[in-house]
Image (cartoon, rainbow, N blue to C red; front, top):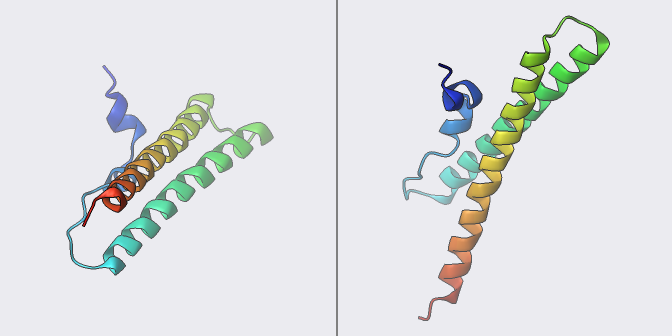
Length: 97
């Protein structure tokens, strides 16, 4: 039996979503930058796989599909985390002092 989450998500995607320790804003900025770079790397890998397949370089179709699905899932995960951060920020802004 294939483990769907282990085969689709790589460790860099999961590492980008680890909870933050409340130390400083530069930590948040570096975590955000690494998450963006991870998503972009995943997208570039998928784009390279598709281009290789279309040019006949010998890429297998299942590898291409897995790369594109991995890129799609990492983007959706990043977008979901971003939405939760924006919701938390909006909730904090609605609090009365």
